[in-house]
Image 1 (cartoon, rainbow, N blue to C red):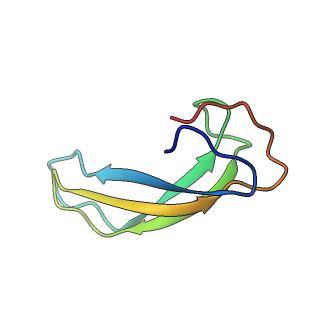
Image 2 (image 1 turned 90 degrees about the horizontal axis):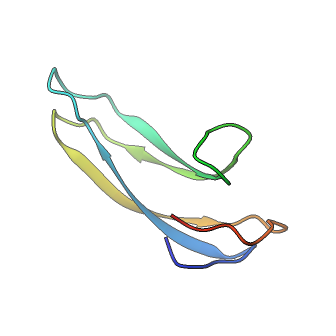
Length: 80
């Protein structure tokens, strides 16, 4: 994520999904991207998502997704 961003602006988020298991392939899934003030999922704002194909054991899938910070979002939150 960038070092700073404002309400109504777009950012590009890069994430990696990994099948950390060794028992078989992981089925196709969806990675969801949320705006949150903490590390707990609940009551957060969904910014977007991306499809992840099935993954063999130990395989990874990396992608970049453009999302927009909703207008009216208060500032002052660190990005990590």
